[in-house]
Length: 310
Ligand SMILES: Cc1cc2nc3c(=O)[nH]c(=O)nc-3n(C[C@H](O)[C@H](O)[C@H](O)COP(=O)(O)O)c2cc1C
Image (cartoon, rainbow, N blue to C red):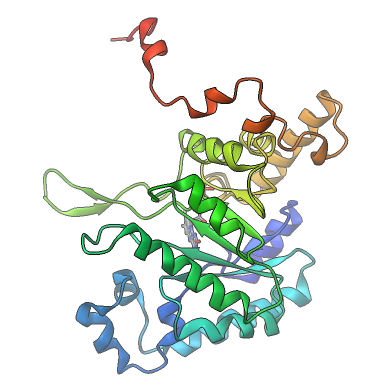
């Protein structure tokens, strides 16, 4: 959706506040010669999907040039902030590229950081250390704001979010949604899980935005499961500084942005709010009269009166 000017101008027309461009993979930045394909397929690389989908005859360098050209084009044609995005899992070789992104005119960089904690020989500390190494490397290359988009797969999520917020980054996006494998039980093939989110995916990020909102030293951005105006309002009430949407735009089209914003406007009028700051964080855990409810995780009480329909 955000790999071309047409869509982005359309998003702007319907009121979107800014765009995060489709992510470049760090491998795309690193690999400039086809000979490196051998190294990728030998299993040393961490993203098998780049091997699968990469157009090698096109030349990897091409995609990075196109990326920078898109940023330049957008900065001429559009007034909204353009945030470049990089999927990365190491702090080496590719980290010269953020400077090129900045020179092309991007307003910020989002680092999509995820190391699947599936390696039995790697400790949580080792995994976490990489996040800080990547941030250190990138923030020293650029002056524009840097944000990180993370998952909730940490052994102590609250501490990790807090520690990340105390680095030189400007924002943390909670949370990324990943490709998930699924099985076909008749053909025994691996299939792809749901690519798009559903409104039922909202509560995970809602809980963590609400818990962390007043406890961090950078902005928190909500992502995953925001499909309508009320979900947007909830994330703002939880304390989000910005809210990202993707799946809903694939589902209902880019025009849906206007509907979500209209719902927000109507709700603000109904509750006599004239600015978002008047209600941002109103429902965060630290402002709540019942802070324990944000940490309640068992259903005990709700099962008592629960009737099944079947
Ligand atoms: C088709 C598709 C492509 C995506 N591409 C990217 C990407 O390039 N980089 C990224 O960080 N996230 C990507 N995402 C994840 C979204 O940015 C977002 O984190 C996720 O879809 C959850 O938000 P949602 O519930 O609003 O869809 C993609 C999601 C979809 C559905």
